[in-house]
Length: 183
Image 1 (cartoon, rainbow, N blue to C red):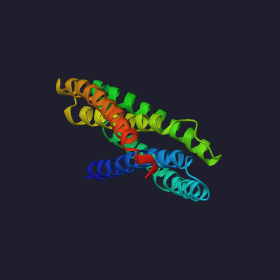
Image 2 (image 1 turned 60 degrees about the vertical axis):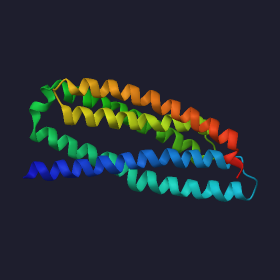
Image 3 (image 1 turned 60 degrees about the horizontal axis):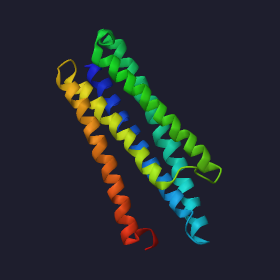
Image 4 (image 1 turned 180 degrees about the horizontal axis):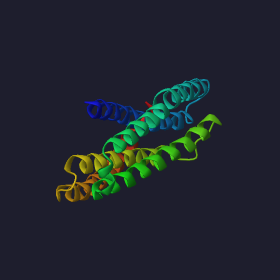
């Protein structure tokens, strides 16, 4: 019974962690796009996005990452044999990638706090999809475990990644063609 409660809490905090990571990049994009606005709109928008980002980052995203890790560690203490399973070792590699992604968002957050972001909104849109790829890969690994299916799932992730990148390029073309940024 303890295992199911801990697993439930782990899933909840993974969900809120990913929600924070997905939304923070959107806020970075909005902040970056506000640079092109005239004053006072630029300052008003950037100040609001900075406030929203700070609250999201320190009230939801960081605590969720820490709590997800605590409950994951607890699950591994309850089920130590998982560490001998290849799917778990690969999943832990994806968790390491997720923390690297999280840290890159921290770097962007620090830039934003200083009033700038060195990445374009287009680059940020592409970067936003990295978390999606990590999420898909991790879910396939956990659900399909040792079956051959997880290999096809991860290969499918590569296909989804290609489709996401093509979708982003198409969206950019549509935005430019329809001049959505100035409406």
